[in-house]
Image 1: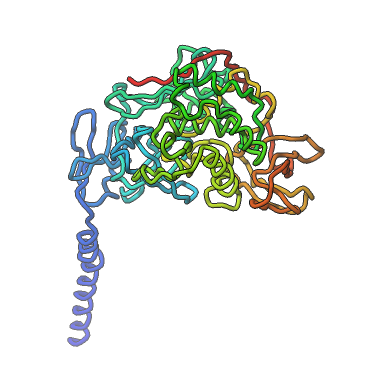
Image 2: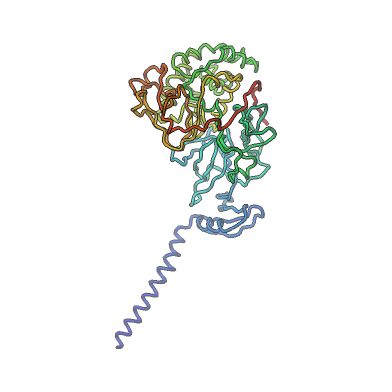
Length: 485
């Protein structure tokens, strides 16, 4: 009997030791080993620290239990890591440095905060290492050390939109604190927008009358707005009179200095040869070359900023002539690349934004597409090209297959959720006949062949259009708006 009691007593002690190890020692050791910093849950309105932790996840859980909209998480250096809602400041680096990100669809991209400082804050990752934000239509994640987080405050200078003389003006913030902005007329204002009203938007499709409404998604318009000049595909034809190009430069008194003066014929010759919209190329040249006055345009004949990367602008390509530059732009850069569905740079042939179009990969400026569109808008002030090139732009609710002329072979596919813009050539039973993005030969894409009048088909059932989902005012005469404050 004595031996049995001893065994029971020993077993009980062992169980107690094991329980202490499992529920106390091991968890404590794990917690100590996984400490990743010092985190403070703070109310920014009072600067009161409500709690501190050595694990970000615990600080985050504490923050979720608070009711105050001013609650944030800071690290030991005082850097804000998480807010309930707020603003992301992207202007944290020199102009030669970009901020890299990964989109919600796992694509990599980049943006330069010196051309667009503010973005909408969407959240912080579970470990406090990444920030989720929205700018120029794209939703993406970037390293917390690339950005700064702020609560919304009326004193910050944010990017906004307003209507002036029937034009939609985008006032782009390039510094939240100094008040530096660029204001550009990007296209005809939709009729749901009113003058004397400030609108907020970080995609240019849905608009909000104040920042709180933006955060809560209380939008003004039910259907999205797509700026025609931002979403017209390059595979369209410009019908503008050549004299319009010179008249535009005359407005700014740069006729004698600009290398683009008297060059209209060059752009229309390239249009005739490669079937790429002449005025879109001219508008892009105006934007990239500073009206044809940049050093690269004057000395290198480089009108489009080819290879003038942010970290080394002097890497810009040099051409023997303007004609050679425009030819290379149309054939090598556009037809072989940005207009080629089989190329990694392809996201649609329209100027676009950071979510779709050429802007995705062409420029670090988040509003490069709007700026190029602005030039086209002003060149086409009578709406000639807009009338003669009907397009439809939607966000896809399902995959969109693009068929060869035989209506059997699939040439390329746009994925569900993408914004797609098409140039309609003919409305047929069950199909839209549209301009192809790349040359089609023998029912296949061939970027080395001549485009001529290549066409493809899409099924109407895959591209459901809401007719007249918005109406736009038409600009009659508004001078180019470009302000620095």
